[in-house]
Image (cartoon, rainbow, N blue to C red; front, side):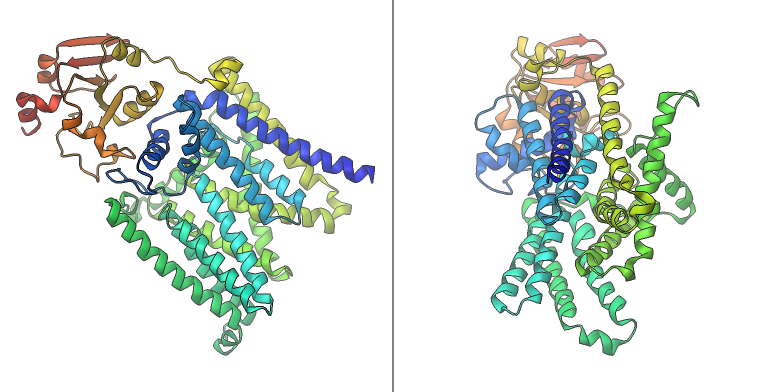
Length: 545
């Protein structure tokens, strides 16, 4: 009895340490990596609270519509916190905890599996991984809906096994609601969840009955689920297109076409390189060094989780007796295959897109590792489970060593009131300037650093390095990502304004001529004007030349 309690305590302590580690690193370090992409959720949360709408009026949606993402969990903190870094951090932390809860709901009978999966999910394998999931919260919704869809499938399968019609009607309703909520967030969800679900049901029928159409007809329950999923997917897609039309979203993410065949191998190499970076594998200066050893360990981890274990699971697919786990494997494999196909053939090569594939692999590999420990205990003992746990400790430690070396010590005051010194904001406050312009990557990051006391509208620097201030605020311009259109409303900002010209940026000489003052801050320049630049006829004429 004491032994069981000790083991239970061991798992609880490991999980708590992992959760506390991620919470601390988010509060301590996320502000140093905060960029304009991160600000989108916070801006959306502000408009949702202000207008009381899931999809606010006059709001820019350029990459996705992001309905149910960390922004919703930031709204409560907006009511009593003023520090916008902290508000953003609390929203992403709560979303991470929500994912942990969803993992335990999915594995409600297997707490050890849920704990191991949570620990591996929380493992900071690289700065990109940490930024995308825990700091920016960009791909949290993908993981949450992957878990919710499997929870819905599990409940649906159980309800279909029941003879009670009321139970399976509730199961179908719950399943439909989850699919509907997924379409409120991202078009990516169709490739990650909805389409793979259809393929998974079709594959399950084929594996059970082979290529015999007569046998397919016998699988009435699976056919019913396949048909219901197809209908739900069609309805969800129509609703998604309706939402896009309603909010004026032009679907920039669908603009990537099929790759030029002649650069296929080059694209594949770039994709694999970016994926390796996601796993913390990087160039080192010496063969024998801690960095080289760490990169080798992470390379081995990548090969195990992304190649060896998935192949081993596929080879045992027909031997898997648990119907739900077998369906989960098929579903995840389809989701991963479609995602990887998009990465290679539609030039979405950035390693961050592999995050959902990595989590999907963990989702099916953790039960497999427990099965190995049970069935092959004489060969492997408990090492398939213990090694990932102790590996997680090493990875957490390595992340803190690098972070503390880069950012220095972080005091308790910095955790509860995170701030980043920004000379630009200080100069603007000294001159009582509340509005201005900057290129995208400087605009919103600087704005959040000043807790939005200064409104900064992003503009497209363009090519060749000429600003487009006067393009009628085109919605398809990705530089206007995730902010209210009010930020560009000249009628609301007729007073003094500024232009931030960062290092390497250039604007026409006429902008300097009309500026009342030019202030140099390190490698940046701030051009101060007595009124909005849109009210200078000479500048408007310059934009049309």
